Length: 259
Image (cartoon, rainbow, N blue to C red):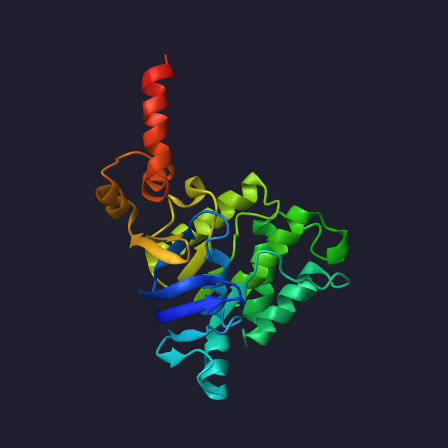
């Protein structure tokens, strides 16, 4: 569903992405993990078309990103990109915004109105749904933004840190269940970033591990465990994969002074 070929992206000072090539299959839930500043958001932005790589190409469902006006419009009709700090219309209500997004994606009005109602209930916004977005808390605004990504019913979801932005435990559980649902059905291709391995361990089909702008690994969680030879949590596996020297130093320290 998504293919990147030799993608290099820089901001004029240093490369942020270096020769990235990967293939994400239809119906996968892929999580991009890695330390801060290693290119997670940039990689998602390149997939979303908001950044144009200096080298390489992005293909979504056989269409080249920014290849032609018709190809780009076709990609946009099937793709939703949600940045970690999205713009929201402060003076509109949550319901009005969700309805507007659904209509932008040509969702049938009757189905759309029902979907909006269900999303407001799901995210515990039923009482606030007809209040201006400016009156909502940061966590509630995050839920409205996530609802706008879901209401489009797009084939491809590109979500930058969907578990951040003040999302409460109920919202986190809701999003995890939604990702698990689509992973089972294989009816959406979802790519998301997260700085917290524990939140994605239960939802990821495969994981992209970025380090210094390069793909250190792209595998299932069990595959990453085989590579590192560690059967622990995903967080422990990533520590051995990304920071092997630190892990060795800690092991030595605990042997000497951990008692």
